[in-house]
Amino acid sequence: MALAHHMVLVIHQVLSRKEVYIEFGGDYYDKRNKPRTVSRLVKRLQKLGYQVDLREVAEEQPVVIVPEPGLAGPVISGLDSKLISAVRRRGRPCK
Image (cartoon, rainbow, N blue to C red; front, top):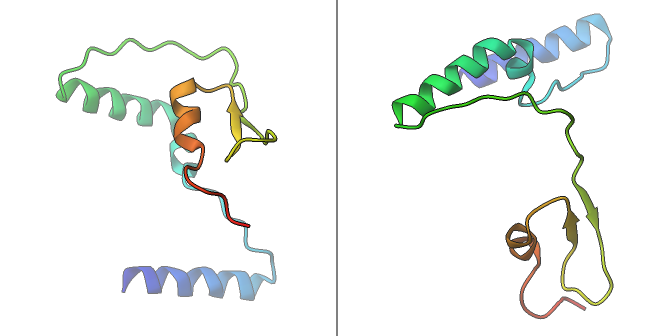
């Protein structure tokens, strides 16, 4: 019921303002308050028994999906070979 109520409110706002609906994404609130999210996740890992050492990432490298001829599925550059083999589809390809 709460989801239906939220959807009605969003639809009403979009229609009354005559604007385009923009989806912010699933990580919108995480990006909005990054220090709070980081501290919450560190505390959660410490409760599970892990020691946490945080470092800033210099630059994110995008993951690119490159189809290669002769393979049953795409090859993803920038990932470990174990992950790549998990992405490939097994079995006979559809015709």
